[in-house]
Length: 70
Image (cartoon, rainbow, N blue to C red; front, side, top):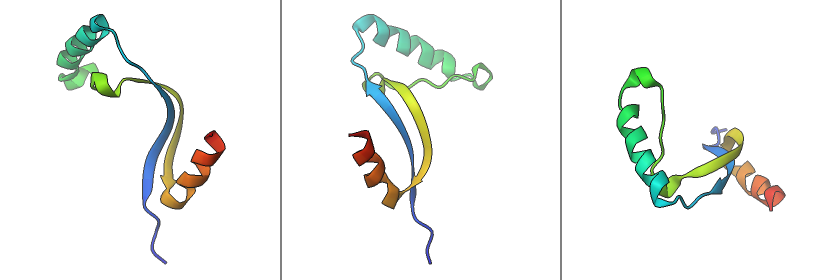
């Protein structure tokens, strides 16, 4: 039997950042280029608040998780 493909899942709330936050994200992205900083900054279009990290989930289980979340 083949192992199921898995996806990295989390529950989140999407955010539409104001211009000042977009500017700050740009500055943070510059700083994040230094591996010693240990910072990971998402693009403004992907900005979100993570509520719960679920982890690696087999594809067949994703539908069930979505139904429960709804």
